[in-house]
Image 1 (tube, rainbow, N blue to C red):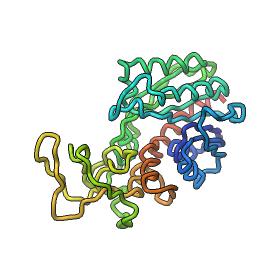
Image 2: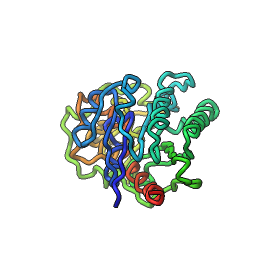
Image 3: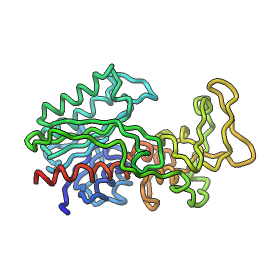
Image 4: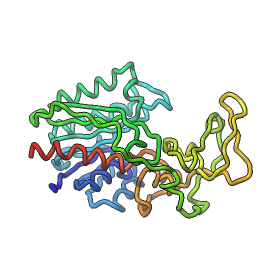
Length: 311
């Protein structure tokens, strides 16, 4: 099996990179500005991880690779927060565009939230597609749910795939599923009770209590968020009870707690032995911002035949 090289921007703790590495690619260079995330990435990766704002990185020092990966920041695109077309974080993808244009990888992969497709009545996704097309790429995107690819979590994300036009790949579409599934019980049912310091114990806000926050052992988790205090409940917690519109309360006769950061990491399909750096808030943030490893691995394997057929 041929080993393709990869460069990763906005890599975070490396969920996207790890998925590609597990599929036989080799990440040779990665970048993020979050110090804890870079330390976590170095825990498992042999890539040269450069911890710096991408706008301050010397582009000429970024190596050429077969594939470029980038989960560019998505807060400005999210359905759960303010959706501003002129949000400064939304233009960070342009650094990605410039590097794709400079290094001309065979393919690039982008990942973002569902809200990207509807923001500005579709203006944003059309602009992103056009920018990459102008760099010389045939661009394809699709909304997928990670639960359909062996990830024990409801997590809808837009996957953007671009192939350099000279490769002649004019038809491409990711499937809806790979036929794999996993429940919370299968994923974390045998994990030991977490240490108190591994669980966020912040007060539960009115926002948290506005809807059901618990999924059972035979279900998949809600989307793992990046904000520690919004992390949903451990499946062994008592069922929540609806008391009014947009108002729930915790059930009785049991222990109610949030998922620990280690449980959240496994739900994101990181290996259980990956150590995340930083304080508890930082660990949850890195995990919530990551691409599920199994989803990334599927994408990596799915595009491999397209790369191999063009040499």
